Image (cartoon, rainbow over all chains, first blue to last red; front, side, top):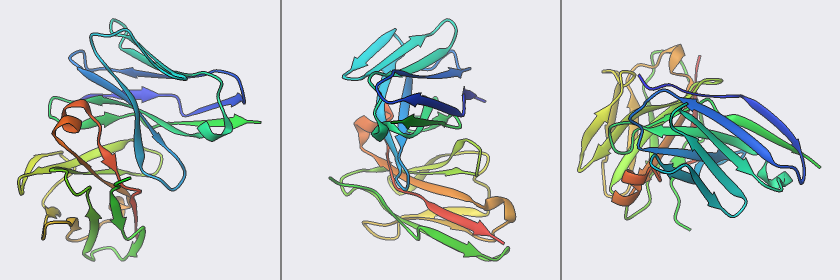
Length: 111
Length: 116
């Protein structure tokens, strides 16, 4: 089945950029996602990218997609302490609404 | 802002007992889901539900699991006879038709199930 992998931890200093990386295996993926989970909260969709795009920018967030290498990244510019959370990479399977998630990357931002 | 709510937030049960996890999806959403995350592992799809029937279920969703929409607002997950390996955080999610296509699922905060 579909496999999504991401590193588990990332620490950055406030004001620096954060880059969270993800790899996936399904070459027929149409949408790829970044979800965010803050402590005690559910998963919240941050952004998504359609597979025919290489890049998507939304304010401080930049998503890069390398379809050849099946690599997705999320860059957060000017990272703030409020960005500390778990970030999940996800891939949509063939069925609408069925997502394949990675384990999540715990982002810690130091003041 | 509308949100998905789940109860209980944490349930401790003995192995072999039945458990019902409850969810109230966003009111105008028509697609409902259960996902789970075993500690340290990936968030895994369990089941999707639309028009009062299961749309898809994963290999995890065996005969011990069932889902129901008993009224116009609740969506429940029942585990008939819990096993130790059912200990996990269970997430309910809902979406409208657009969200189902784009992957914008609205998740609840999760129900942590501990099986002793």
